[in-house]
Image (cartoon, rainbow over the protein chains, first blue to last red):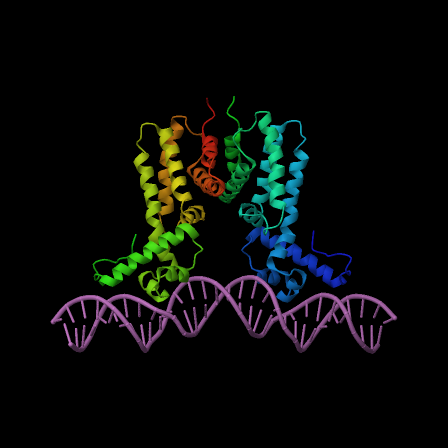
Length: 191
Length: 191
DNA sequence: ATAGAATCGGAGAGCTCTCTCCGTTTGCCG
DNA sequence: CGGCAAACGGAGAGAGCTCTCCGATTCTAT
C-alpha cells in the first residue's frame, strides 16, 4: 500500500528493513496514542533519527496514511462482500458491529473515522466508504430490518457517534456494548 | 463561576468592563471554534494585549471554565428539576434531548462534555452530572420507559456519542435528528 | 490637578512540533 | 577491497502556543 513508486529502483536492503520497522512501530504508536502522536516520538520509539523517517515518508500525513488507509479499505471491501448476503438485515448490522469492533481497538482509526474526512480532500475513499455502506443499508431497509428514514450519511454519522460512545464504555468496563443500543435505535419499529 | 475572590477590593471600572468584554468574546470564540482556540487569538479578537487577558484569568483553563462551567451546571440543575416530573420517561428523554440541543450549538461545550472529565481532577461537577442523570434514569427505568440494563455511565457515554453524531448530521442538513435514533435505542423493548 | 495605585500592552522566554539540510556512515558492485 | 551512491542522524530553522515581566498608560481619591 506504500508509495513505492515501484519500478524506479529497488530500495537498498537496509532501507527496506528500516522502512518496515518504521511502519510497524508507527502502527503500534497510532493504535495506542492516536493521530496526535508526534513524528519525532515515532522516530524515537523506532530508534531512528527523525531525518531517516522523513526519508521514507515525506510528511507526517503520508506515514499515517500508509499505516491506516489499508485498514479503511478493508472496511469498504467487507461491505462489498456482504452486499450479496442472504439476510440483508443481518449483513448490515454485522458490518456495523465489525467496523466498530475493529476501530475501537485502534485509537488512530477512531480519530480518522470520526474526523471530517477520512483523508485530505481529493481522495475518493470517503465516498467509496459511504457508497458501500449505502448498498448494505438500502438492502436492509428493503427487507424492513432498518428504519426507512435513514440515509447512508446518517449511518456514517451514527457510526462516528458509536465509536465515541463505545470507546468510552470500553475504557470503563466493557460490560454493555453501546453498539447494541445504537443498532437497536436503527432497527425498524414495525414489529 | 468567576474567581472574583470578592470582598477583596472592587475592580476598577475600566477593568470590570474589560473583563466582561473578554468573557463575551471568549464565549463566542469557544462556541464557534471549540477548546482548541488559542489564548492569543481570543485576546486578539477582543482587542486586548495578551497580558491583559492573563491579568483577569490566570490560565487558559481558568478562562474557559469561567465561560463554560455555568452552562454545565445548568444541565445538572435541569436534571434535578425534572427528577420529580410526573412522566419519568418523558422527563428522561426530554432532558437528554435538551442537553444535546444546547451542546450541539456550542463547539466548546461539546468538546468539554465529550472529553474524559468535564474539569481538571478534583472537581465534583462530573460526579454531580452523572448522579443527577442517574436519578432521571432510574425513575425512567422503574416505569419501564428505558432499558433496564443501562447505567448512568452508559447514558453518559451515549450522550457523548450522540453529540458527535448529531453535530455531524447538523453540519450536513439537519433533517433527521440522530438524537431520535439513539433515544429509540435506549427505549425498553417491552411493548 | 496630581500623586500613586491599578491596569494595560506586547516583547520575549521557553516549550513543542514539523520538516530541512548536510556531514557522516553503510551497503553494494566491479 | 575500494569507491561511490544510498541511507542515516540529529542539529536547528521556523512556526505556534502558553505564560511572564515590566515600562507605559489610565483611572481615581484627595
